[in-house]
Length: 337
Ligand SMILES: NC(=O)c1ccc[n+]([C@@H]2O[C@H](COP(=O)([O-])OP(=O)(O)OC[C@H]3O[C@@H](n4cnc5c(N)ncnc54)[C@H](OP(=O)(O)O)[C@@H]3O)[C@@H](O)[C@H]2O)c1
Image (cartoon, rainbow, N blue to C red; front, top):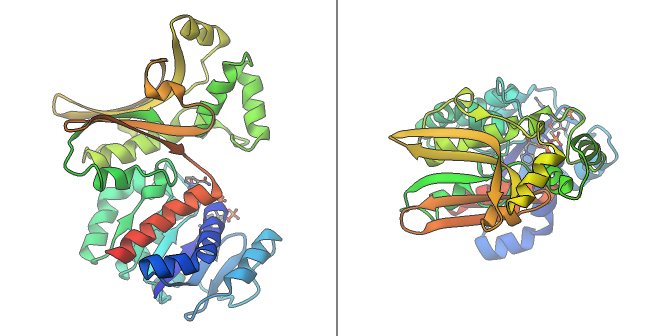
């Protein structure tokens, strides 16, 4: 029985709980996986703990009604709850802070120091502190899994570590941010940048403050994670050059079309002269390249390998169930190992 603690019960936390609930029988029969959610900490809903399993149905109902949790409420702060609960595994699903990492860093440290595996979709700890946290995980004999930090549940980190293990990867290039890919796709229909941004905000693709997406900062965090995890680059987020899509005009879109190409915000990691170079910038991609056909909020990455040539993977980069699945896949990997 895997006992799970959740830090953050927002979109991803609730998505994970729904998947676990809906697939409980399948997961037990197929993988022998059985679980209990024993602790949850969330700013909006409160902190709850029951060593024998929380009432997740009730919690999902309360969250849907935007009400505080009413059962098994405890007077413990996040770190105390993580340290003292009987979970084997902590999922860090609070907000991403790409400048300091925010409280997520303390959450991860508290879990690892007390011998709990960590699974996270939070880019902060992964982009800013992966080597230190991995060392802590190794020292405590537990795992630190981060599939959901890059392109939600579309397998990226686990692909390079699993099916592509043995191939040397010299370059990774791709569309790492769905919001900007949606905006560039819509601009091809003739809508100007400001108008497209408004539509993207109305549809919930872009946040009220869209800076993180349109300036390329979100993609830069993911590039840093790929550089450090896939290529052992040991680089900092500030080492990755970054330009967003704010300067792309309808004239640029027309120019690309005339050249049988299409603008994409490309995140790239490349080994050059023994160094690993990371960058984020808009690029005109030839229509013959697989990345050119990836439209809307979809993400895609091309891996250049020595044994397989180019391998491209296309899939969702966000979403409640899609990111919830990224957490499930890492939990299952821990269970199966
Ligand atoms: N949603 C996606 O499609 C997606 C995809 C890939 C990665 N991610 C990453 O996954 C993580 C979770 O995303 P999400 O979409 O679930 O976010 P979300 O819907 O905003 O949920 C986060 C929840 O965590 C709570 N929270 C924030 N800081 C906390 C803290 N220090 N202690 C306890 N609770 C805290 C929030 O409460 P308040 O609302 O009161 O602050 C909120 O209920 C983020 O790091 C995000 O970048 C998300």
